[in-house]
Length: 498
Image 1 (cartoon, rainbow, N blue to C red):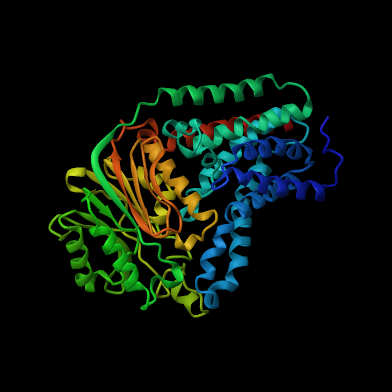
Image 2 (tube, helix red, strand yellow):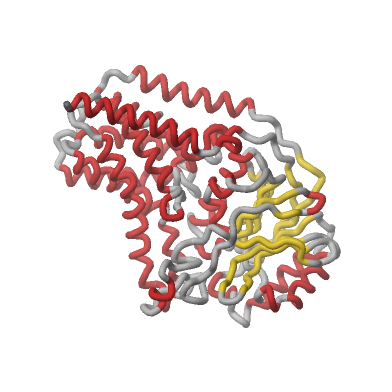
């Protein structure tokens, strides 16, 4: 008997929101994955108490709102960098972001609920529905897959499943291993199949992790620069030269590495007028190639870019960020919104930054080909999948000063680890305020510089592994499988209703 059956709906609604908030403790920096598992198991009995699809939708919305409000609480941080201009938006941003993303879950709950049907079957249908809508969340309206369920497993052995089925497939497995089990336990019967699936999924994940090959290091030394420039001082004319000089000093330090990486927007000048700065970088590098972040203009358009300075200190490569952050780097209908004083926080005009042409590889000399990712782009598995060819390593430069010092930077790092596992490639990551890190192809951090500390690390570059299954097949097989299961469940439900 389901103990929550007789509770008033308002109480179940509040409890669902609380469970969602608890589930977010599985994400970084807490990493308490059991909290996510327990919250999902307890969600099933609440779902099964709903008497209509409308109630189910509200319950799903409550759980997801609690989850996203906790997981994305860092999102208020950027609004306080320029508090006078943006602070008033902070509560609206968190409220609308959490509540808006929760609509995907509300739709999944609405579609899956059929009072009177088999409890376990309905929660299987719910798991499939949520998985489909989570995949949509990663793509619709440029996508925002932050805080996906697979993220809670990053620092566990089972995270290696990412290399096989990717983040959306792994999220689906997480839901299928928890929701039906919760339904069976609440009914005190019929839990053999759900329990077998859960135990089997864990066994397969651990067994697959044990088969992953060892990672070997190259002899190449990579220097990752971390200037630790607070965002409110980063462009201040009084402080910007100090941060630049700090990076030059770190660059010139001995012994000499094989490659140096500066973070996003690390040069305090536009590319067209940055020659004195680039000359100083080249002089400090003493023949070592450098990747660095810089802004550039092209007529009326501006770009968030990465350039490569070769051994001779000459610019040899250019990459423009193509997956921009809405309301951060640009505002939809920017010139219209600017009339009301609404600008992207990192933008300097109403329209903000322009998007580059797309994913591209950059030649890194003897180190091979790099797949550049600027900040937010490392959140998207599809951005990595869209590369024209396989890289030798992933390269992320970022300015996580926007994300504060609580959960945001750590969650961003976790997603970088996910991309490394999915592709079987090492990831070098230079972050303005941290965490700068070298990540091996199994997603393990081999060297790191803590958040909020100025300095640099010299780390050996791990060798890439062979291309993973996920890097070859992408998200399409998971999408097709979920759609087939959804169609079968939906058809069976309609038959039983008829």
